[in-house]
Length: 147
Image 1: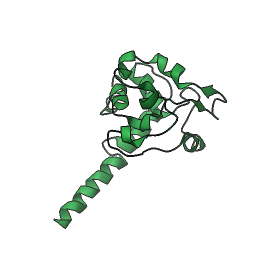
Image 2: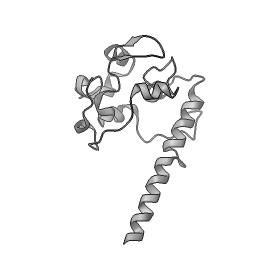
Image 3: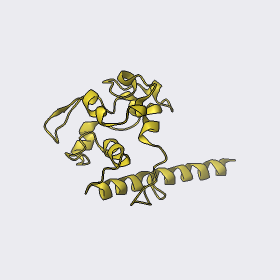
């Protein structure tokens, strides 16, 4: 991404939504202990391009209060609770929904003093030397040994 060549997510926000990520709950209405406010998902998503949600049942795929692993492309439940993220100080006031909200805004061109921290978090998880990649390589090597 412009200005951050090391930041190379493999999916755009649109593709993430279209894949049923977060079980349809990412932009549900939340009560943020960081901002002290209630954030309404229907209002929050108005800042994003309508084509990100094209063909989706927004109530089911974007702002649902109930996680549905069946709509996730991989059919699994993933992630942890907002309370867990807040307790680890991973949420800051500008993005009360967390990393993916930051990513959606970054993707659209917003740049803030939080970008470096968020990119570093992504890199340690999903980047070239991230723990997901290392975990997959380890599983693959283990599988080869069994053959």
